[in-house]
Length: 387
Image (tube, rainbow, N blue to C red; front, side, top):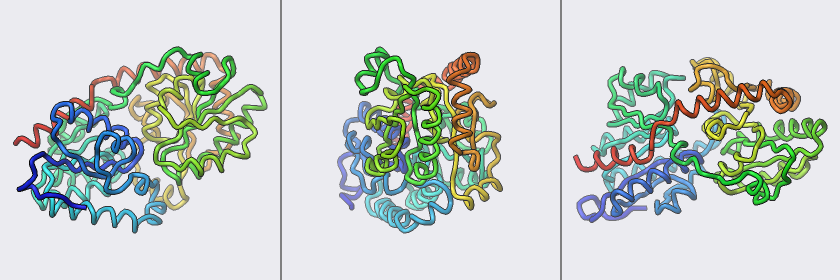
């Protein structure tokens, strides 16, 4: 895909890369904010349905790019290489006015190198977590990226000390935090029963995550169902996932599971507890004040390699931002139905445990509340194109 070169274009062109479901969400809000400030900007890139709705011409769907773990990446390497070559060709021929990268570090840091060679400015929004692992990448970032817009409070100081131009814009999830309405009405809208406990199942946005986590989540829900026969489960479907996959995996469950393809905030607003894959969804859940158990499981090789290089005490963003464990984490071999159910019951049936967790989550929400991230980042993007 290509269009008129930079010399003949009437409008500014931004190439934007959002390789995962959460990045598609944040990217869609950023695109909308930029268009509010300059309606004539054109967008091409990697993204999902939400970015497409905002008018981004999708070159590669993010559903093809969403993988987790080293061995899982290797299984999709041909798809990733093909996508990289498409974007590199656009950088070379069409010379976008700006490249915006959202998370997805290895792919995006490499693409930033190509942009630098073609003298295209690069804005990295939601930067890679180099403070957690492979810190050597920060030197590449400093050489290849012109501006950073970071979303966690401690990241600004980290990147600035390493010579980068960086702005803390707040977490974009706070931009998207909606008014979800009265709980009992929302429960009815979702086709659930009022007065019965509701557990949210959030197994991630990537196929490998779901395969690794959802069976144990369902098993835990079935154990909880024995103690609470009226228990209901609600599964918000990520835009990058096939509904068929989820329906097959949930079809034999002994606990009723409602699959919901709408707004995840609406789903979370009715949950008494959530089982959540580590990642952005843990912060979404925290912002909604929903007690949770964080789960992380990858292939044994990916986990072994991760143990060698990761330098953080917690796997979940909720605990990382809090600086302590405010919600329980289960990692790798700990991800069993029995252990998940044990942690979940401690929350469901322990009023003091639940009360303390809700209080800690409220404090976390206040900590990440600086914003609006999308508008601040949009201003940076437009400023970079006018230099």
